Image (spheres, rainbow, N blue to C red):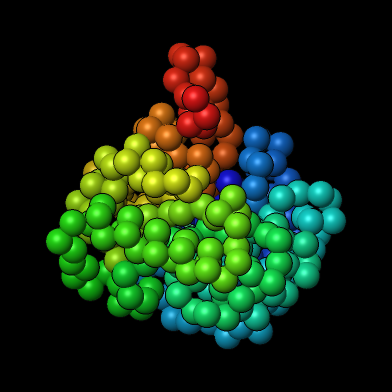
Length: 263
Ligand code: HH2
């Protein structure tokens, strides 16, 4: 899953693809490099970010989603707003990626009324305040049970299990130790019964480990994490740097590892 942030303020690539034409070009490059899904987001949810108006978010993502879907690409929309999700589906999106984990009933309804896939992500609190001292007794157990409960909510609304993927939400109300614990538990979370999304690309804890302050330069650490996650059974890798990640996966495959957890 290649990340396409059509935003002026995303944490690692804000402003780079804010213009629709630049965004569409970047999406095409990611597809050529091996991305199967393009995840289009119009609202930065980095720690401390302010909420955006839904109209503004829709105006950012819809032209890009329309263009890519018209080209036959598989597009996911990264939104927590039902009006944006609905409009994105009408524009041809095939997946709704909700960083607030479908905690808003209107978001559940949008999925239930359609045939699309969805990514249920765990976030503790809201982006504005989520990194202010996040605490868990057992982060893996708590995140896992939240994800299963939200998948159950979707199931109760009539969404087939096959349409649901889960994501522990690295950096969304998690310290570096929480992120590492979740990453170490990838195999356990991959066994919960839903395809697991690994979305660690360029995140701050990688910078904290490697000493790389500039998020856009966190490639090596991000690829290392992606390989680990793939080898442990993650099924969808949400990444900024598609080509190097795909090349690394090819090597993993050649070694006989099972990067897609299909064994
Ligand atoms: N992280 C971000 C955005 N969307 N979706 C899922 N499923 N999982 C994630 O961990 C996730 C996500 C934040 O990263 P990014 O899109 O690069 O930045 P920003 O929110 O600043 O636009």
